[in-house]
Length: 302
Ligand code: 13P
Ligand code: SF4
Image 1: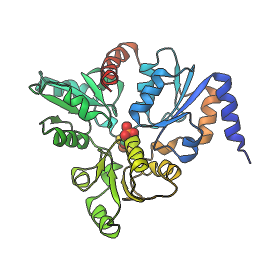
Image 2 (image 1 turned 30 degrees about the horizontal axis):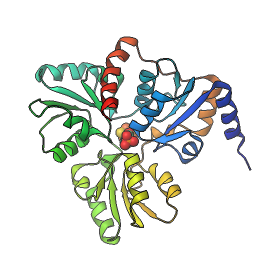
Image 3 (image 1 turned 90 degrees about the vertical axis):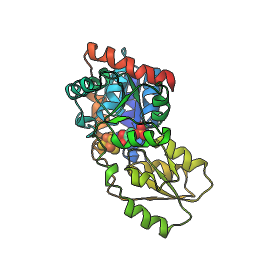
């Protein structure tokens, strides 16, 4: 039996020439009706090339803001205006300006999980899927100030054997994943492959077989012949992993690695957002212009 809410969403989508973009951590029912489900990089690439007048962005605020910056002529809305990212809130543009005074020659590499104002103060953006590539694009003799995720920064630094200056930001959901839990699970499932997100702490990352963005985790699980996987990231990813791989088993390291902000969006709110064309995400043009440069440099290298 078809769901009247889903039917109404499709009707409104058509009326407004809208597309729905969903992050891999969204509720399963939202992922199932989206036109595209992906990681931060994939979502920004889709937004940039979308042939639509309206983008319903189901994710958190910085993701919708990035889409709004890239899509000057499209309206970007979020179903819940309170869906923020706590990590992005761990650094302000003013704080970054002060830090830059201490390292005037450093290049600022900014994780996309940040506000537009922070991006505007940065030289180049990165996501979890291209951070190593972006940092490698900066000449070896240049200092790098990496903001705001110290865990992603430490991971990139160890991959490239390159020192960087870090900000003290982190993802509360990924930091609830503990190495002790992973050690126990590995001993209970010795054949399982361990795949984690680079927002995890270095001790968790050191125990993994593979480290990747959310879409990278999905690709790895789909292409690897192993039947059992231990997953170290936000639990919303399990929906897609299980749906696309019904013959495989996925074990979260902990059910506590949930991002409550990602779960604020619901099907009803998606419908209401299309009914009322809200909440519209806008970025002041002077900030958007600066931020766009940092984002575009990243997209050009991706
Ligand atoms: P991805 O870009 O890997 O999807 O990560 C976004 C995010 O917020 C992870 O917590
Ligand atoms: Fe932010 Fe972490 Fe939630 Fe990702 S999972 S949106 S980094 S709080």
